[in-house]
Amino acid sequence: MSFKDIRGQQQAIKLLQKEIATSSVGGTYLFTGPAGVGKSLTALTFAKALNCEKGKTDSCDRCSSCRKIEHGNHPDVRVITPEKDSIKIEQTRSLKREVVYKLYEGRKKVWIIEKADSLTLEAANSLLKLLEEPPAEVVLILISQSEGKLLPTILSRCRIIRFLPLSLKEIEEIIAEHLPQNPEKIHLLARLARGKVGEALRLIKEEGILENREEILDSLKKERKIEEIFNLAARWASYNKEELERILDILLFWFRDLLILKQGGDRWLINDDKTRELKKQKEKYSFLDLKQIIETIEKTRYYLKSNVNQRLALEAMWLKLVYRT
Ligand SMILES: [Zn+2]
Image (tube, rainbow, N blue to C red):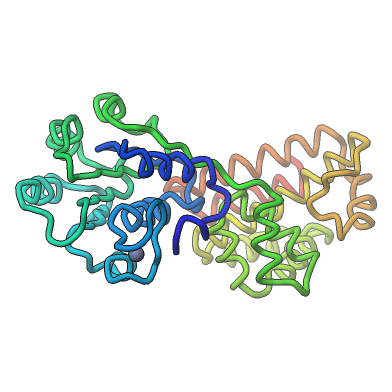
């Protein structure tokens, strides 16, 4: 993968390429933005471009340096990831020990610190001096979804490069390349991906998203008995977090569409292949119902991200959705 293959991050990439072209590459960067939009990929490609034997401001992807970086065995490029759930002082110490060593074969040592917000306080403090004045041949790239989670002392030492979610159109184009035969699916998947290429690529591989939606919508239609609701909640509770999040997204998009119709609009519907069904259902809910249901789903999404009992949270949500209590 080279810069020209990365989608939707032209602004960030243009900046980095300009720095390479004008020999003004910094020593410490922070790449920040939501998960799945290309931060890590860009960091690795930056490492390649900085060390490429052939390319000038992009990686050639064919020379021995590019290939070694791609395969994770270039001696001057390291990716540091959390051990269990944090980056510990031993990891940063081992990094600092390498500062004194000469370059093995590249032009720049590039150290990429993934999930930099998971640095323990001790580890973060031990890095401050290095971040302040890295040796000329070292480029440190911190990666984090949110700059707010980093210590101000770290932030102030970084050149911040922001990565934005991709536009709906960009995501649709990427999905369309993979699924040219199914336009309805493209539209729904693009919305479910929420601007993240990583998520879009994952969803493409998953089968049964449309069937999933049918099942979810079907469960809303029927007058449900309490036992059925509990059974459904129990089944969903066995899903992993990503699957659950997707189910809640599908629900959320459905009620969001109903709200749009209720307000008299019919453009921008996510489930635009289901307009007739939406129009039928719209009469079942008052404006206030819809607002409350959307709030309930949003709250459940939030609860499920923390360590609540998934089943209880889903039961409570489903009861609210069906009985509107
Ligand atoms: Zn190369």
